[in-house]
Amino acid sequence: MPRTIPFALSARRRLRTGWQRWQGSWWQIMQCGLGAGIAWSLARALWDQRYPVFACVAVVVCLGVQNNQRLRRVGELGVGVTIGVLFGTLIVHLVGRGPLQITGIVVAAMFVARFLDSGILLVNQAALQACFIVAYPPMPGSTGGARWLDAMTGVVVALGVAALLPPDPRRDVRGRARAYAGQLADLLEDAAGAVRARDPAKAEEVLSRARGTQSELDGWSQSVTAGWEVHRLSPLRRRGRSEIVQQRKLQAGMDRATRNVRVALRRVSTALKYDEQLPDSLAGALEQLAAAVRSTGEPAYPGETLPPSVAGLQELAVTLGPRTLGAQSLSATVVVAQLRSTVVDLLQAQGVGAAEAHRLLPH
Image (cartoon, rainbow, N blue to C red):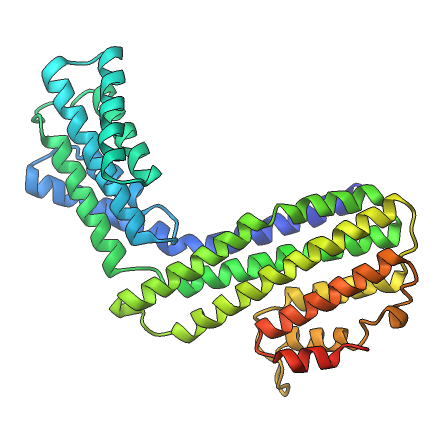
């Protein structure tokens, strides 16, 4: 029974995270399928190709499921695909297939791609597509340049889909915001559990997870930047700029708050390791902060003027005094100080002025 509860909690978290990933990617997945179908039809109609495999491959490789800097990414991959296919076709036509030919085409394609652009995606795709051309036998009846024409068709379709039918970037940004808020709330809840159980091993594990959150924050930041670019460039997505601006402010505030949380968790881990006093009221404050963080982005309840996250943070702020929480040891005082900074950062990120946020804290 003791093992069942953590497993069930982990399963729920994985399901929630998977659902959020799906919500943020379904439009890109549909774009890949639509683009592959269009590229197949165009390649058959324009070049009389029976099986235009490379047209479909080029679309899926270029579009993918990422929003970050999507137009640049599609361009880089498109150039890489066409370079690789072109070089592979020429090598096969001139000297045939074999290990030496594969070696030569990979080196040549990567040299040219690296010379043209610094993007890693471009270079890798040039080499990969060249390998496909050399290793994959041609379809019956296809001409020497047919695969290159297929790849070019796929790249053009991918660029058209990316430019004309961009996904609403707000979905991805919201999804990343919810996912990260949930991740940070999980860390705070688990830290509270470690304090209540006086479990230094669990506290160390929570600290290790907290140190690994920066990539998620960076992905959220990149998603916000990509969203701003889409709203600026696409005529279909120019509405909602204000939400992107708010998300940029929220992400920056959450980044600062996370740094304070990491310091607090490090002190919790150290205190439990050396058996320093940490009051249960501190665990309660961590749980209250977790609840406020988890509700970030939710609208105000009917009849209320403040969103639940802001209201929860304000209620927590007035209790964050060392004497109020019974913090008598140095470690407990440090944790309280970091929680105070975290609350201020999160309030400012959600539109509360700095002076008002600091006024709430006990002196």
